[in-house]
Amino acid sequence: MRWSDTLVLISPVIPLGDTDDNGFVLQPEEIRHTVYANRKSVGHREFYESAGVGYITQMKFDVFSGDFGNQGMAEYEGKRYKILRTYIDPKSGEFTELTLSDLSQRGDDSG
Image 1 (cartoon, rainbow, N blue to C red):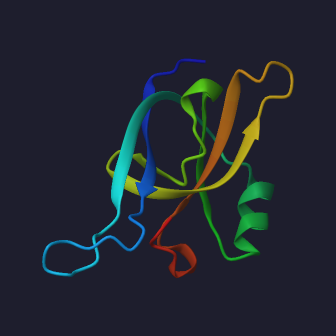
Image 2 (image 1 turned 180 degrees about the horizontal axis):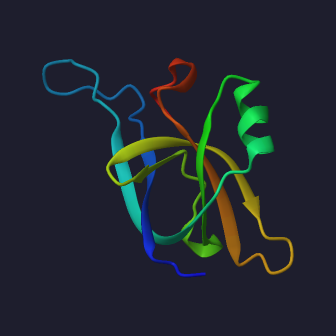
C-alpha cells in the first residue's frame, strides 16, 4: 500500500437549538480531520448493488482504523462524499475500508 492519498474526514457538530444574538438558529460547524489513505477500485458487483438501492459507489479507501472516528462525510480532491459503508479488516483491525458516494445521490446533501 502506498498511502499517497489524503482524505478529509468530516463530522458535523450540530448545535442543539442554540441561537445567535439575533435569535437565528446557529448553523452546524464541522470538525475536519485529514488522514493518509490508500485509494482502491470499486468492483462492478458492488457498483451495481449500490445502484439498485439508489446510491452510486464512487470510490473506496483504506485508512488506518485509529484515524477513523465514525465520521459521516469525507472530502477528496475538493469534492464531498457520503461514507456509505465501513469495513474493518478482521485479521488485524488495523485498517478500515470506507466506501464513498456522491452527496448528491438520492437528494442527500447533509451527510
